[in-house]
Length: 206
Image 1 (cartoon, helix red, strand yellow):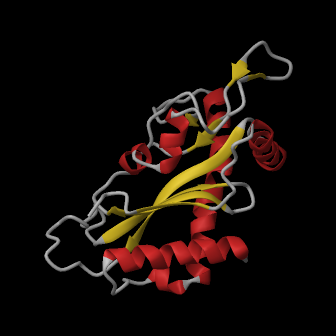
Image 2: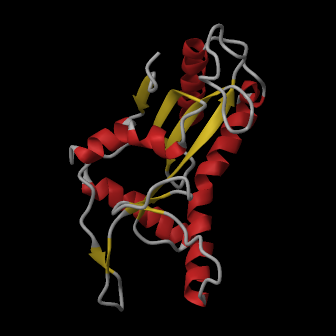
């Protein structure tokens, strides 16, 4: 089975720079983190070991799972999800094969150009925020991870974590609304993928 079984967009993934700026405005207003166009992370959805699958779905948590990768806006809505990759896949690997990354590489997302930060001479790109599992790039930011951080770096990490946690909050809301996601799903991966997508659709609707 292909490692990216399904890709789904909900019509919230903008293709106009003004809409990206609206998302960034919300993050700046609420969490004081500028130029943020979404928070990204992956969640393992536990499934019963598929027949004749070996260790294909076996993850680092020592369970069997499929991966739900999501980009979330400030209002805990899924702007883009990728469901179905096997549990062995890393977050960065799933992201690299995602529909978002494809569109980004094709330059069809129309992300805004970097803007000058008020009261400074520095320009900052519009970025998604993710954890250390992702690769740092022009439009994907992650926190400082080395020891002995400066005061400025600690302040950055604090503001960064407040912006990034919305994706974890969204996963929590999703799982508590649809509590089957808190269990081990006794379905084959294809059906489990469809079920998770349905939960994401209903989450956005609600």
